[in-house]
Amino acid sequence: MAVQSTCPLCDCVDSWRHALVSCTMSRCVWALSDEVLVSKMSENLEANARIWLFQFSESLDHASFTWLVITLWSIWYARRKAIYESIFQSPQQTTSFVNKYIDELGQLNARKEHQITQTASSAQQKRWLPPPNGKVKFNVDGAVARSWRGGAAAAICRDQDGLYLGSSAVVL
Image 1 (cartoon, rainbow, N blue to C red):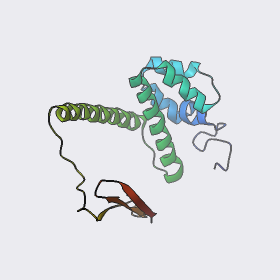
Image 2: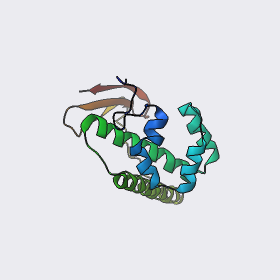
Image 3: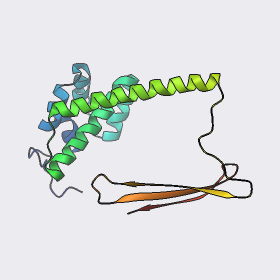
Image 4: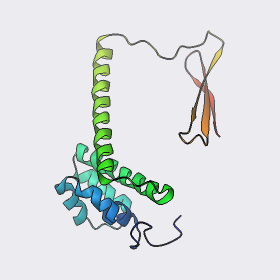
């Protein structure tokens, strides 16, 4: 929760709209963006963030809405880094991240469509190998945070038919 009502970056009154749309930091990112989308954003004066976003989901095409949401997410991430870690990204870095992320999404979608067409034309092998009859199988995985300050481990149990029997997760 915020301990002050002003933006820690520019000392203006802070709100979701200020943080994501009108703060100097976010305006610099939007200045590098599609002018039509930015003008639509400035015309939409909805005070409720959820309704504001839903209005865009209904009025924009899928690609524009995806770009909007990823840009908002990137601005929020850059703000958090600047406020809490004193790591400042340039607007070009944020915009570059958005463009690369969307390109990667496009590549994943193309790869997924390619896999779907391959699956339709040939039988696909199962990735999960079931245990012998009457036995169960535990699949376990873990990860370490980039900061090396923690991680997580999880396990899932399934029978020979792939029926879920239980799972557990631990955050360290």
